[in-house]
Length: 148
Image (cartoon, rainbow, N blue to C red; front, side, top):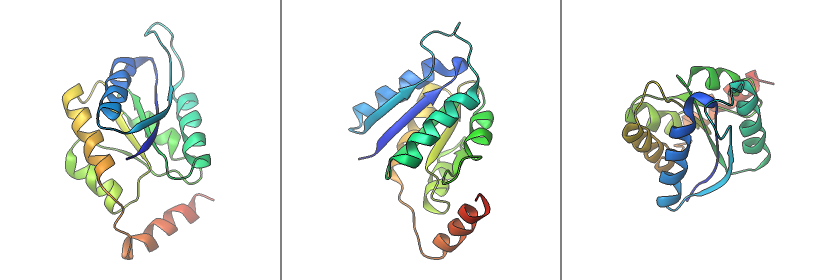
């Protein structure tokens, strides 16, 4: 079972709550949930991305989930952090490949792009997929080296 750090900005509070509930129902542990409590509490998504990425980086074996309007801003902000490989996914194939081939450790979703049902399925796919290693490990090492 996965240990997760989940965060969102004001545009994705409801989806964040939905994903926390889905993760817990599936037996995963939500180590931290970050973001505003009310949609009127506008915050900057790079701040939440930084907090989640810091926790994922300093807590080995954990994964992150970041949600904003499109997922794109969170992914851009997250990928600026050393050791983070964040992927925006819109379909199950991409969710599986992000983990299996790219060892993604942060899933990014857009609340204005995917509905709650698809978001739960993407989370399930992401969390149930393991990194394949092998030739992919060499490529992931190059990604990590380029961020230092």
